[in-house]
Length: 330
Image 1 (cartoon, rainbow, N blue to C red):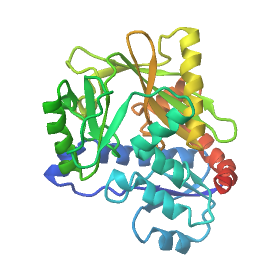
Image 2: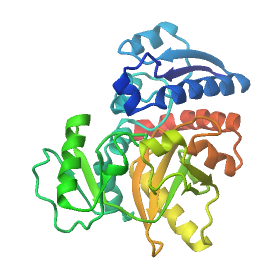
Image 3: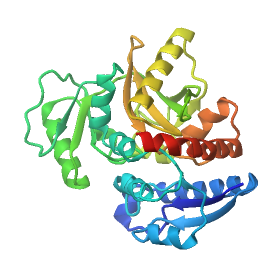
């Protein structure tokens, strides 16, 4: 059995503006950390909780005998810092759960991930990055378009107003994203069809987990995951999704190709939308997917593959030991 350092984002009192931006994040982190800690202890490991901070490396070195780190941290101050925590962990000679720094950066920056996917033949939507809000719209893009922050997670910055149908609304939304989130705005063609998410588990021989479909309820007019819809849980989840055997295999093959293209290890989750002709488009990859039991998508897809929560946490831990060698190579 191992001495596991559980690195996490310490919850703190949020301002009204922070709560508005991410009302569910603190609760999800708290419940996730408790569940992971309980699972690790149930599996016989000794656990030390390590709140992420700028002093984290010193704190870990003071503990001294940690065998492996379970990284559940989505950033010290915000989700944009998710990769910064991984960069710190890479300075230690300790295996950790999660992909290396290059994969985390590529996954967090949606435009980078899209370019990599396109390079290896994974289908994506046409897109354009707006850095100032003054750029001319690429005429190859077809409305409707969706505007989102270029490197945020958990649907932050995505509302019913994010889908636009003309240039006036497009530029209004682009400027809002740039000013409100202090980052570039990603504009991409909006696929009006079914929505799926796919988990991939493993390091040397990753396996694609059963596909999960997001099925929006009658409680909302929106048919895509806005922040409000996520908070209110205005959707159902079906796993495995009802797809033909051929379409299932096609999507899984692309998912594995996307996972490998970013050199992911241990786990990741990939979002896909399908148009009316059943053409899949890979939207983004989450290299540190949520792990709240009975709620987050990744544990749900893993359970459909036969992994109960405690087994899943143990599998990720063991994969991290294997992945330590892979991270050195990559």
